[in-house]
Length: 162
Figure (cartoon, rainbow, N blue to C red):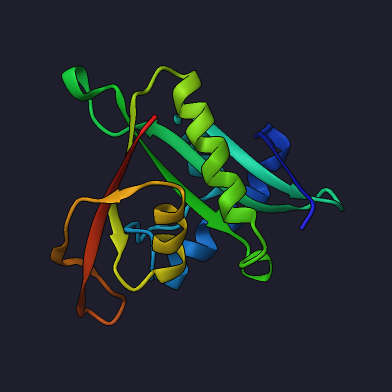
């Protein structure tokens, strides 16, 4: 798939908010339960250190990521990121391009480590992608993710040095 990764602009906000909300509604990857509105989406994306979007050859948004500090103070050099890819674009390299761009942006913004706190254990596509790029799994947190049906699933934290 021919895609371009770039920083988001205000014109991207409706598509970004819709894509983010689709992943939240699926309830299998993001910990958030509340969907964004136009106003809260604008504030949410503006509050990140960096937001990247993936645009396909037609100019349509097919993915996004957010990048921000994972902690503060003495741990403020560790960043975190979240990724969303349109269902119709999954398996076509969009996620890989987003992760690679976020790693470069993390380094450019002065972060030294990227850490993912809560990769759902059954999110095998994401886990394989992260591991293929050099991320290391830190362990397993049993029952760390509450699913939509109220049951719990393990999460796997990951990290990579930038």
